Length: 336
Ligand code: CDT
Image (cartoon, rainbow, N blue to C red; front, top):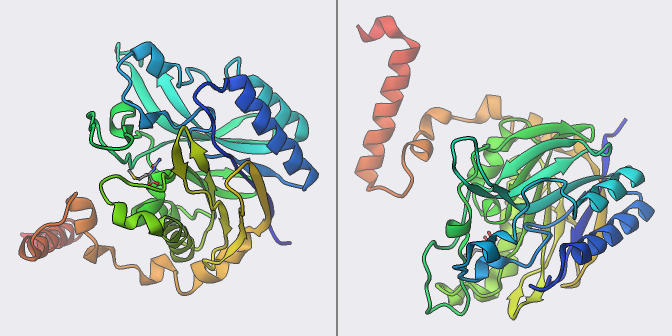
């Protein structure tokens, strides 16, 4: 019996700054109903689905900033979304800005978060964005800001994989999709489907020469992440011109072969769907990407030993030391 998950990738067009949560939730419910008509099991929404992409602004007023965050999920304004999904028997993956007013140690915490919700309304998993792009200080030379490093902390939950929808599901968020480590950590936990939402401006102020390549890079990273880890990847955009900033769209559902099987053709609210056979990853996982047989982690030690690039001599030294240490730990008698 094939293990099919019918996926709805619910691309959103722009969300205006003055659009209320209730108005956005109404749009999301429209997606849910269409997804139900089209036989979906699970609907994936973008990063920071509930508001405009506020990190584009330098906001000094805490109350103004915190109005973009959720302190509970579901809360009073998102409850109708959860209720409708449950009524329709649909799972969902939702990105939102998470605010913890007090973590028990008197600290306020803010994360860029996504949750996976089962068809029964239970939260099956939570992910907090790890690769935060952009900057933390005001940079007035930019046409617009990208202040994720100011408005969010680095996620503290790791790249976990959750049982659900008959398979193993992982999540990551936007910039995470550009990093091979994201997929590999989940691949090493047998992930079969990675769900991710994104808000990607067409223009990146420090590197305008890359602007024409936004679509290419988007496809490139998601397709390679899928193929190299034998997993489905569902990438869902918030696209179109939002508060004067054009964002790429191009939501895609990508098979473990690395092939895109469904792609959005507009920059607006658009649902794309695919029947995803989770067993399609098996041929890759058991042969060319049989990790247990073919990976050589002893030769990848630099990946976790350093953050940025080092001189090749330094790199070779770190690798050799790490290998020797691992060998000594594995054979304690030989080291004496
Ligand atoms: N939201 C998000 O992570 N966007 C980034 C923009 C990178 S340019 C600062 C992305 O990787 O698409």
